[in-house]
Length: 363
Image 1 (cartoon, one colour):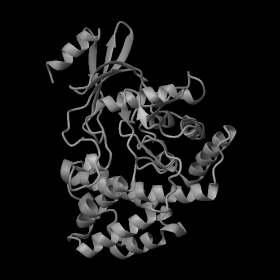
Image 2 (cartoon, helix red, strand yellow):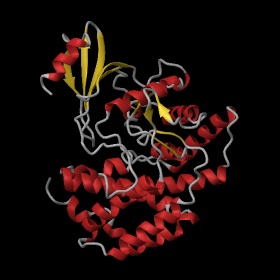
Image 3 (cartoon, helix red, strand yellow):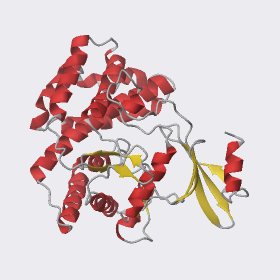
Image 4 (spheres, one colour):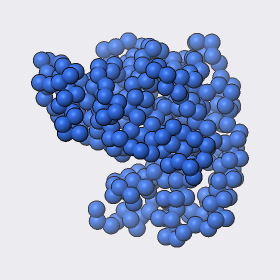
């Protein structure tokens, strides 16, 4: 990789640029900012991953990434999704150069004004979240395409993928929190409850779903107009799924506490923007879908954070568990999720949900 990058940059006309690595996140993907002659760009480095095979129909036949419809190392999918978003009038980075085999993209630089940074600097959170909601509404005017640009299929975010994600809490978090293995009966009951719940999800009109649409993946671009003020940078794992999913990703942010009041404000802007385009929602049904998608996403996140700690040694994610469980308490209070709420209350007492015995250990 050390030899490939200089050649890639030379071929793209950026061989003389200075390179500054940017902080990483929970994934293996890395970024570096390039500067040359008063211009800037980002180098995206996505290490190859053999587990990123096209999605199939059983978890036993393929790795988790494939079953959960994750792109893994496929930077071609990032480029295809970016092209689709820009075609809808949204702010996704332009792709300047690509070496898909090496996992390298040279992309437009939106700067450093992440929503989290803009908010810390005093920006009005209602303005930012309303902008993000309206950008989603723009995207959801059209149903999800079958194919992204470049003949790249947009996989369905189906029950197989969602069940694989909910299983993460059983595989990674509960054994850690309870300090014991789970019984076959517990695992099977969990899967049956989630299968029944997800069967009630409205699937008549799937839309493009980013999957990680939240304050650390959105940039505020106030110099632009309308929905283009919201810069989007994390969508390579996009799927065709429920319009509730990305809205919940935004309003139940695992890394930033979002109040119920701000969540409601954001939802109303989303619904208003859809209505302005003649796409009214059945609000009662949509709120039920939001509760279901919120619970599914947050259960997945609890499992992922436990996995990041155990597998990757990233202890800091344990400190985020109380926030995620606080969202889950709210989500599972919906009458449609009563059976799941009872299951978790029986299996995992509230004093075990933050894994305090691990948080006190030295890093």
